[in-house]
Image 1 (cartoon, rainbow, N blue to C red):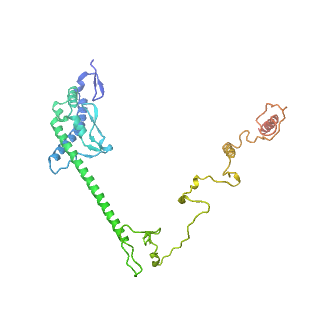
Image 2: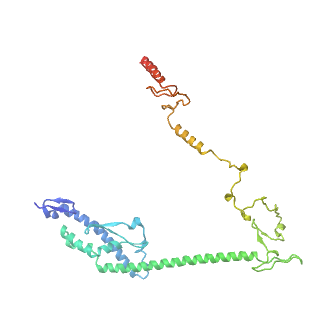
Length: 340
């Protein structure tokens, strides 16, 4: 008896190749080919749209090139004829080329060869085979249109970058003009109040010892003539604050974090607990986590024992001698018997 395994139906038929003409096999074949035909039709429609947009002089090729998105453009299409998954979209750097990967596969010689084999093995209709193939001329036309679309996209990106650079330069120029205008207002000569008072010389270079204005810490112009006092404002000078015998970082002295502190009496003052106290406290923290009523928790370590003392076989004890624990055990046992 002939045995035949059908990869499309995923079953073994003991009737041999007669299974290929059965109703179940024909139904599964039509359903699988219909799914693949939808993907092929969408890819060929995208190729035709790209070629038509390329022939149009006003077209910019924006539909054939898109920003790459892994969630959208990493999808694969199962090729029934070749028995493997094929990437639907192509990729060029950070750009995605819709349907480019599937079109390249459908136009390849390997897909044409595997399609012929699949049609022969599954007894599919010969008239439907050309629907699952892309002619080489059609793919070459699509490839040329795609290259022109990529070039147009590159030109648009360069133009956008040039416009952004021009906008940045224009903003910088306006900022420089604003700063220069503000500086010119500050350097304008003041009018003379009397014959003995003259305005300082105008120009970029001025002698600060003869009425030059310097910005003070409060943002107002201050000079030796103290014109700011005419506005009714007054400041109090408290003198230079200096520490006797010690400098600061502004006078070139060593910063305090680099100087060794001199302790009085020649001994360093200890801050915080010592290392031994820390270890003792750590042991106490460990003991606090143990149960309070554990065996040996209340053991009397201060009791004195002579050298002639030998241990007796009694129970575990906390106080007194170990031999006394036998009497304690007998007493407790008697009380328990009476309770019973």
